[in-house]
Image 1 (spheres, rainbow, N blue to C red):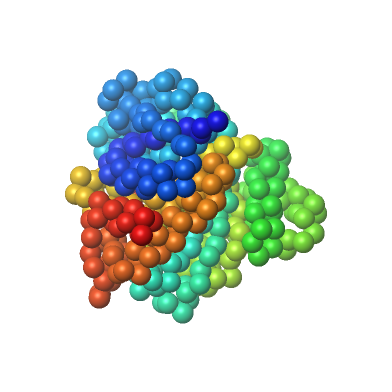
Image 2: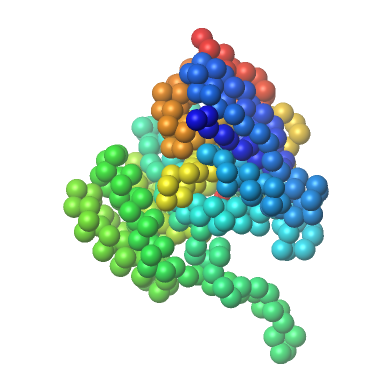
Length: 359
Ligand SMILES: NC(=O)c1ccc[n+]([C@@H]2O[C@H](COP(=O)([O-])OP(=O)(O)OC[C@H]3O[C@@H](n4cnc5c(N)ncnc54)[C@H](O)[C@@H]3O)[C@@H](O)[C@H]2O)c1
Ligand SMILES: CC(C)[C@H](C(=O)O)[C@@H](O)C(=O)O
Ligand SMILES: [Mg+2]
């Protein structure tokens, strides 16, 4: 039976980068006779404008029925001023929760051609290939109670709850250990167990789960040290498993080691490996509409989608190789530009990947 994808372009640069990913999807669909079909739905600010809510039922229903979802990015200043409950980002959190997409895989891989674009010296980052496994549907992002309240003295107080149950920690730990078995058999669990009980439990449960994976070496690090080590000696890392908030922060940091946040794809998977795929970056309002955004993280997210949800690993590899060839040709969007390379816009970058696939 043919497989169906829902595309959620979103806001800001979202539509620009998803348009390029769609071209790549069209090319691999034909080239590899994948028989894929897809349609567009609204999420985020675009959905607020059309329906008054960031995640309309029609989008959620379509996403539930689809075999995979490709998302651009959501959010932007236009919607920040309105009531907190309908911020575009809440649509993103809701779709992650509704679809139970608890396992967020964020690979930070340095294409050798981009060593000069990395924030770190080439000798520190060359060969970098790490995978952040971020828990995505729990922790402080979803914990109750939360809110902003008025105290008796009239002062406002903001509060959130960082909370993880054992089963939530267990299932993400299994994902990390199983991915490590296919990689270099090392897992680092990142916590703040010296201060936060919720992460003390995290550390205990990950350690318990590790007993089921005697072939994988487990180590632990506090998040502040991990942030420092990521820029000091990032190649010491292989699979990093951590909670929702720490994973969000560390993955943006890891992105810069690969040259740009515009290079980092992601997969958000449920228990059955159904997934939503998206670049790790946001809607980049500062460059939206200028045709200069880097579409490669979104295009590489298509590759992850083909590999993890659509059972088309050869098409995934072809996309990754095509990205490599385009970088070999010296083509660079502004965010990864360095001396001696050729600066191109979003469309030209997408077209070059399609041409590299076809050629
Ligand atoms: N998954 C998502 O949809 C997602 C992720 C992160 C942020 N957001 C939202 O996006 C909005 C903007 O957030 P922000 O500015 O903190 O983060 P951002 O990731 O949108 O932008 C941070 C910086 O990186 C640059 N950048 C991001 N993607 C790029 C690309 N593909 N090519 C070139 N440069 C790129 C931007 O121009 C900006 O300077 C906010 O509303 C935020 O909540 C959404
Ligand atoms: C937009 C926001 C809700 C989101 C997150 O924090 O998860 C983003 O930063 C991400 O990394 O996907
Ligand atoms: Mg983030």
